[in-house]
Image (cartoon, rainbow, N blue to C red; front, side, top):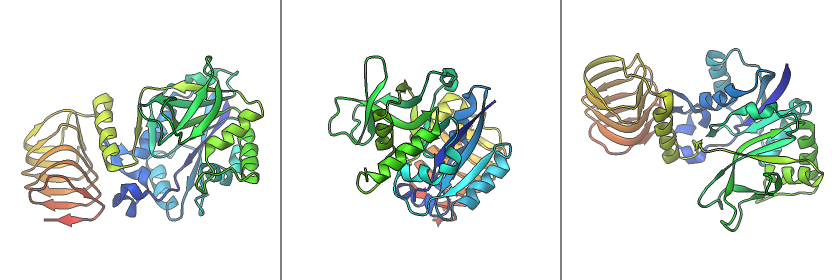
Length: 335
């Protein structure tokens, strides 16, 4: 077996997902019957059997307790470590905090708020020195892009390009056959003060590696989901429900109509309501005389006489009355 280190930075404040991130880290937000974090970890189910993953979670202040409790409850079989990034100075800076775990053997780096569909069997190729996963997008200017040769080898990575000519956006998923090379490149990046808006971006560290002769190939994907903003999370919920993560909706039900696809936790109680399509309902929710479309409900939500769509409701939210769209964090109440 070969140990592979999987580094997942998650120290961001999640300000674009307020109010949900006031009370929990962004990866623990509910989507399609699980947390987004569960789906992120599920990306590695396709690792070749010869690899033994060891996770390094890079967290901010006050995040570790909730993330670790979730891991102990749902992923106790995994080997993992926590690293604190108290000063958020970019992607390379985050990885450098975890350098003691990344300086031997192969590694993967991915973000905790993005999700891709890929087959990691490609890592069986012993000739693969480094890989960056990409997806064509109409306008790549708010992302980073990979500039490539005809054989899919990378010439350079460009963060936040000025033009849309090259549309191969980097999706935040990287492989390095030797993590020590990346750490050395980050050290050179920091010594040379290669930053963008005061942050150390991973793309610049990779460019340092490329300048020293490391060969990187692009790996193309078709599905790239994220939890960066509420609208994107709802899109992700729709996709996951449409692609194998819905259920039959069996629960404590009385006079309900279900329009698939939906996910309804078996412990939910629903009366005289219409649910769906694209609705996820967490454990111990109580819904009565309501209509829900395109919504995500965390656990223990209570709804009465409510019509909502395109809404995200956190844990223990209470809603009574007719609304259209709601975005409520944990322990909120509205009537």
